Length: 402
Image (cartoon, rainbow, N blue to C red; front, side):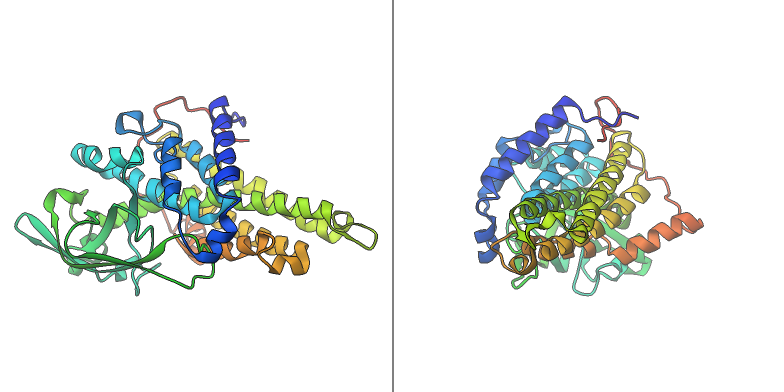
């Protein structure tokens, strides 16, 4: 095992960190207050080649490894969760799913412009009555000649008002339950599509999140992703990639909490000395550091399995569960360290705390991941081979962890 990052990865981290410090950190408090998503951020991410960082060059991406995607997500979430979420959805949930399951024609039409950052991709699985219980979705797609007719609704969809393309899941045969679900590539401009943002969120306020509506939308049959009945498998494999990016983002949030808290520890004095001298404050700082290091190891282990083209559902689940829990606790401790000032947006830690709750819920709640991990250990759960795997990274397969 090699626990060092490559020179290319270190340069990538420096680039993204510089971008965040210049383009996000100075403005995020106002964006968070107003609840507005600055669409131009995507243009700047495109210029840096970050919209398809781990997509092969032949499909318009930068051709870097999957752990490079983790680095991007870490550093973006250090600025704010909204921007990591955008990359998670665009790259992790949509583009990597197209890379894994799409036909060559679908990759050329949809993946290439997304990897170049010319188009934005999103993911439509969750519904008002279907979250963890995916089989309860109500959206349907009925085959009629050369088209599928899509009807239904999705909710809590990131980039709902911004994305150009969506991967949407619907029943083509409800009598078959999990085996009757299919996946489709949908374009915003098609007749029958509409979206609506959700207001009043606890956190990630500068992120665009909302609902999608499909009313007798005609989907060309060539936009079926995979085969009919493969939708559930496609959704679960997509979540492996999404959860990986969420876990990496949680590492970035712990970094942000730690940086803000250490800075405040050196600035604030009580009882005649810096608060960093107080042992219970030190305990919170130490717990943040422990959470950071453990979470990072779990994330980059999962990333290396992706680099090798191996199944990583178990490892990614553990990384997502633990990293998000550590981030939530780190944000809570960061507010505590800041005392009354932590309750005001004069300091960023109250935003960290608000933002840290959603990742504990989405892409598998902590309860779902707890059950998954117990199932693996007890032998109740085994990952079956997929007929299409996420392609291994085309570069070398060194273990790039630090």
